[in-house]
Amino acid sequence: MLRYVTRRFLSALLSLFIIITTMFCLLRLMPIEGYLGANWEKMSEEVIAAKLAAKGLDKPVIVQLFNFYKDLLHGDLGRSWIYRENVEITKIIQPKIKVSAKMGVMAMALSLLVGIPLGAAMARSKGKWPDKLGTGFIILIQAVPSAVYFLFIQMYATKGTGIPMLYDSAVPLSWVLPIISLALPSIASYGMWMRRYMVDQMNQDYVKLARAKGVSNHRITMSHVFRNAFVPMVQTIPGSLLFTIMGSLYVESIYSVPGMGGLLINVIQRQDNTMVQALILIFASVGVVGLFLGDVLMVMVDPRISLTRGEDKR
Image (tube, rainbow, N blue to C red; front, side):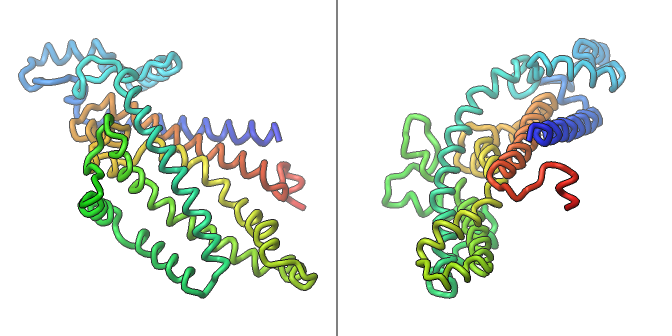
């Protein structure tokens, strides 16, 4: 187990290194305006050269990359030069991470509490009206662009309910619509996969044998089918949780939520290269960590997975 975790951890680190290095080099091809701050067009060439030199941007890319990783190891993500001029990026993102984390955890909890039972109910009533109704909901959520039903929710769910249309940290009720909007795609996804895995398990020989022995359908479903169907879904939960915590780019934008997703769109539009670099690093780290935790959790809950090459060959 320890060898497997170590191997997966090193693989995750290598993937993260490749992503970050590629991102760093690509951003160095972007216009230099994103490093100069406001009113750069009024600066003389001497002033521009001095500013770039002060930030180390006049050095070869390999030297810049080395300095970037050196600062990163000390927890220094750099400074913003356009979004909030000469302010440390860590100070900018700290309050936004808290907002995205609170909203993401609540959205993830809602998606699990609704999506998993939805898929289980659909599987148990395969071919009947609950299954057809659930299938229609899943198709609607996955086929229709999210922008459409997000705007529909924002426009019509506020009428007569007293729920604010936009987010306000001082009004707890204003969290409702962003959380629901953030959870809807995950609810549909969990429902679809849970139904599929449970239907597959219901067709297995051990289920037919249990029925032949007179075991009740409820016991078969809860003690065997549901548990075995839930195992492959475990792998996706850590990644989904972390991505949800980081916030949805579109949800945070339409509800004016001051989180990480809206911040990324803002700094890209304003061409704050240092901020873009830091946020892509954070989002990439979240993705890689989610995949790593999913792999480890999958091994912990599924004893059928071999951890050695010799066992894999057998």
